Structure formats: C-alpha cells, structure tokens
Length: 409
Image (cartoon, rainbow, N blue to C red; front, side):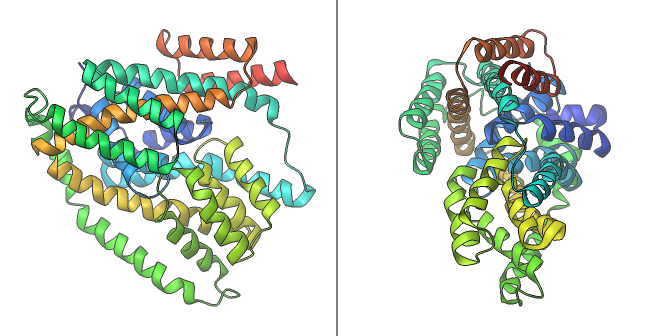
C-alpha cells in the first residue's frame, strides 16, 4: 500500500534545501524530453522517497497536460507545492531548471564565440535507450497500482495506440477529454474510489498551504499586468523586459508540449522580431534536445543572443513562470473539488490515459535511438537496474552516456 504524502509530511517534511538538492539532481539527469523528466520525478518522489502517492502524481500530470505551458516544469511545481507549499514549488521548479540553464549558457557562449556546437552525438546515443528504460519503468510502477482491471488497461492501450498511430496536439486533447468522459461512465459508482480519505481531508499541512492561496492569486495578477504593459516599452531601452513579456505571453498559449510550441516560437523570434536567424533557431532547438530538462530551455539561447546573460535569464523566467503559477492556482481548486464523485471518476479515467501517454513517449524515444546490440543492452541493463536494484537515475543516465561515448566515438 502506498504511503500518503500527507502522512509523510506529518512524520517529517523534507527541508527546502533537501528538495533543492533532489530536483537539482533530477534536472541534471533528465534527458529525453518532458515525459522523461516526469518519469525521473516519479521515480524519486513516489518510488524512492515516498513523498507523493501514484494517484497524486498522476493527478498532477493530468492537470498539467490540459493546461498551457511546459508540462514537465508544471508537474515539478505541482509536486513542490504538494510537499512544501508555495516555497516548495518555487524551490523545486528553480532547481530542476538550473542545470540545463547553465549548460545552455555555456553552449550559447561557445556557439557565438566559435561558431559550432560541442560534439555530443556519441554520448547522446547512450542517453536515449537509458531514458526509454526510465520511462518504461515508470509505466510499470504506475500501472501496477492504477491499471487494476481490464477497463483501466483498455483506456491506457487506446491512448498508446492513438498517440503512436495518429499523434499531434489534437490527438492528445481528444485522449484527455475522451478518457475523462469514459471515467464518468465507467467509474462513477466505484465505491472504493469514492471513499473519503480522512488524512487528506483533515491534514493541517494541506490547510496551511491553502492559506498561501491569496498570495499566489495576487502574484499571478501582477504577472498578467506586467505582460500587458511591457510590450509597449521601447525595445532599445527595455529589451530584457520585452523578452520577458514575449516569452511569458507565448508560454500561456502553449498546449500539447514543447514540440507543438516550436512553430509559434519561430514565428515570434525569427519572423516578427528578427532576434535570431532561422539557422540559429534550429540550433537553439537542437541544444534544448541535447541538454537535460525541458526542451523549452531553448529560450535561454535566444535571450542570450539578444541581451546576454540578463536577456537569457528574462527569457527563461518568462517561458516557465506564468504557466507554473496558473498550474498552482488550478491545483488549489483541484484539491478543493476532489471529493466530487464525478471529478474522481474523471480523474481516474484520465490517469489511465496518462499512463498510456507516458508509454507512447517511451516508444518515440526508443525510435529516435540508434537500434543495435549496444543500445539494446543499455536499455535492458538500465531497466533491470531501475526495477530490480532500485538504483537512482542520477547514476544510470551518466553511466549510459559514458558507454555511448566509448562505444560510438
């Protein structure tokens, strides 16, 4: 039986410093896109640290999937909020972004100084099969607890099939909506799911976090006001502010993950503002893919080109902050409405679909990898290390990259 997060908090909440360290490690090893990062978060917080339950983790992923913004960072903010409130959300989100932020800064400096990117292809060939293994291990662990019957399993299988065979943002949206509706039809009268969790309902920690909600609302309103005024500033004097406003505005239009966002970003930074060239934009996206963490860290490269380190910082804050704040606002209301029989049924259906979507992500990562005996060996060894020996991802990913470097260089 999984440990409820609130019980863990009562026994002794992790310090903000320990949370920072956990997510700094996650941000340093989560190669392979947003589902890979989410899988690493689940491995740490649910399987290893027992700070969240599988149900709570899947609720966060489900909510992040239907809201705008980078899904992985939104899930991290949600997890931090559940564990340590608003301070926890800020600490976890900042920590998970920092490694890729500094790496992109270094690569940007090298790119504009020497005109080329460092050779990382061999290392990346080792990363990809290990990332696929991390995602598969996450599906197995979540599936054991959430896919308890043929109905739940069927929803997950259909989600995998739709994403693999059709794909795209509208398919993702259709999966979420259909899964929620199916949940109402199949699980509304499930007595076990409708039991009230007294620990959750009476948790002093949860109530204390809700007291922070007015502050969160005020902060979100302040950010929105900034977005309305900054675009009218002189670009020559307030270029960093323009970067902040532009990326903040775009981030609230992002639905469906980072790759869906690429055309919108290109239209703004290449065609509208002429901040970078088309080739530089392609290279920025490539850097986002070869670094750990979210692909939208590419915004850091663009900000660096426009206004140096300060511009990189403003672009990074803009792309991640407003959606994360919206995520926390919705998390508050999600918790308040969770005793609704209909919402419980909807969430159960969506959780099953999310597990299928995560498995589809493993498929796409595996297909982008070079398939041979070496990559196959890395995949199975990483999977065994995760499932049988419970090794940390922070060890598995670097070792896999080293094997790739030795084998493919």
